Amino acid sequence: MAIELQPEMLDFTTLLLPGEYLAWGQASAEPTALTARLFTQSGAIPGLRAFVGMSWGTPFDGVEAMRFQSYCGAGHNRVLERAGALDILPCHYSDLPGLLARQVDVLLLNLADDGTGRFSFGAALEYLAPLVDSARLVVAEVNDQTPWSCGERTLSADDIDIIVRTSRPPATSPKTEPGEVERAIAARVAGLVEDEATLQIGIGGLPEAILAALAGHRDLGLHSGLASDGVAGLVEAGALTNARKSIDAGIAVAGLVAGGPQLMRYVNRNPCFALRPTTYTHAFDVLSAHRRFTAINAAIEVDLTGQINAEVAGGRYVGAVGGAADFLRGARASRGGLPIVALPATVRGREGARSRIVIRLGGPTSTARADAGIIVTEYGVADLRGLGLGERRRRMIDIAAPEFRAALEAGEETSPHPART
Image (cartoon, rainbow, N blue to C red; front, side):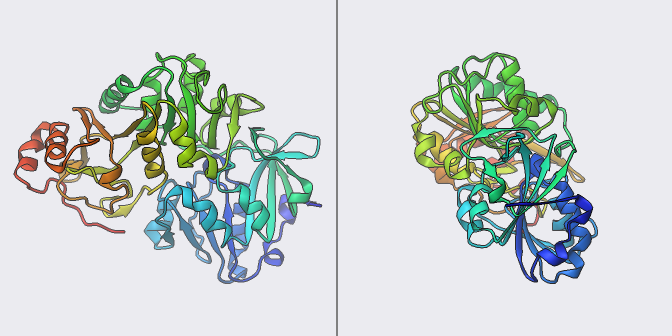
């Protein structure tokens, strides 16, 4: 049975053991009251380590006593990366549940309470669910502003060791308005997507622009690692009904809810939305069984053979291996599926514009060319499926920015920057 404490009474120095490994929810699921308390006390507990996902509400400035590991460099993780305190775990997202279950000693959660003794996972189930059973200690921030999400599992007080009650809005990420280039790419992607398709979507300004461009579609479904603000917008537009899904008909499925108030209102106590674990959202047999499963992901750069770097830009770790390969493979195997990767053709830096269609990647190969499908820029669509390297090269040059095509034809490097992995 859980013990209830006021936030100021929570003393991690008496709860944690030296060298323990912690984990907590990411993005809108961050238990920010718990992490803030942890960081003020971590200096008294030697050797603490933590696995963090996208960090939106947990600033790491001044946290010097702990070491951190993550699958990504998003959000406040960039503070850790710049300080040399972030160890990247380069794995497919589908591998995270098993990897973490073997390592995590202490789990911090952000939960919702229904008033009857049951607790919802709120904004994230994904890789957290199995950690409840394997962690030595489970501490829950029960937040009355966290949405009650439907899903395959709820918790009772017997599953939790300590409960801390709070009232604060879920963490959000700053919004970026799409520009002309993003809108052009979004229009091209929307032109590929059929009505009644089941969508997987990544996170960021470009994926949000693509969701907005799909508002005129009908009977779309959602089966994704995450649901973002654009998902709620599609529901309001009448485009996302989930009515034609091959699996989970009538229900939008995601592992993580990452967004603002509109999205939280859509999720809260909605039986037509369900959180599922990563072992389900990223499972190949589930993804491939959907008709018209359409995976839409972003990238930092793509080479002429279809190899994708989604991790390193300008020598800094800013992205992730993530679930792209899982979803692209599922979409390739789906009847009528579309494995899509979208990106602007150029990026502007101090030295001017550089091509993001390149001869050689400036970072690691996050997705192999064998898994590449359809690459989209503002200049066109390159469907690489079933093509040899020669034809891939021609099609990729055709969707590069015109000012870089001659250099790419000649095999000249257009985007020199140091790789840092």
